[in-house]
Picture 1: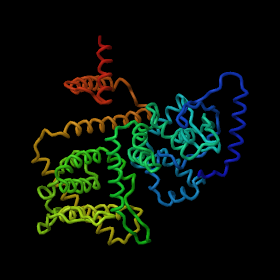
Picture 2: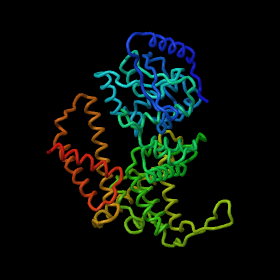
Picture 3: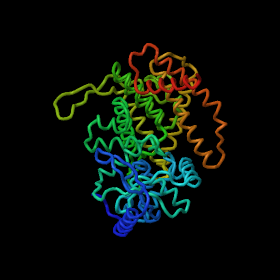
Picture 4: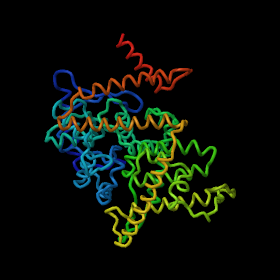
Length: 474
């Protein structure tokens, strides 16, 4: 059921009036095409006052960021179209996904683009004036003091599932202005699963492989587990924990952890669990991706002995009961359980030291001390591992290097957006770097094509752009 905004009737009257005027006007009426219940549908486009439209409280774009302010998040649930909730949505829509209290450079770039070029693509609204697509554009136009926004109008019988499907389909179009953040993309996938959608439909909708879907779900489960393990009860009786937004900038580390864990799990399950816990501890302390990569199953015992479990702890695995049966299966060893307990303590200390946690000064001081001593021991261990480690050829090395390159490219995109927003961007500054990147992509396409019977979609894409380069040079 869709909550009805207070201005719903007034908005409906204005929309119907403008639709009627548009139909009776001379000339070609503007329309926008969307995927609607499995078929293309042309929607009429009208101009609406910016300030009477509502941000969509169910938009996937800011779901992970909502928990930044728990009181406003509760207000968003209680009265999603009230002034407080709508102002909070405005703040989140323009905020940096990893730090919602700061303005996202991509939002500033969008504002600059709208200011210079105007609105190119229309948004989408319901008959009650709720924005299904164009929430961020509405926020930018509002900041620019623009009075109107062009929007397509969805059919009056649009259901909540229709709205979710339309937003997702539009968001995943390649030409869309601003991508979902990492965690919000994971949440969008999870939502489709909870709706009972088959995996084949989800992979098609999100344009991902089955293996990628499995990786995304594993990462989201790990994030939720870490949040749950970090939960404490503060002096006011409130639950306090890490938040989804705290993992927004951890994508590369989590993806590498998944690859390393999955490879190890097949041949050494206990070592895989040990690796998982130690890397999660490092991720919680926000160590760099290259540092986290140094952590192997024996990292604590070899390089960070102050954090290692006591030698008196048995390495034998315990047994666990399989739910719903009388059967038992091997569980994690006592050593892994000890490492897990240490990681949980760090996660809880992170939650305790947050500003929103109302705890005694003694508890906060103890948590800060634990984080400090753990970080010192971890840093010393990472330094030792880095100095003693040798460059080894391994299956994951190429994927790790490509992950680094993608992360660097992401930072480049942010830098370009920031430069454009402040009027300091020059295309000529990128000419040399783009030329080198073009040559490297061409070489990558050649290397991957050698001996390959059938390439993946990604390889075929590389081969295609490589052919285009050769044609242009000839």
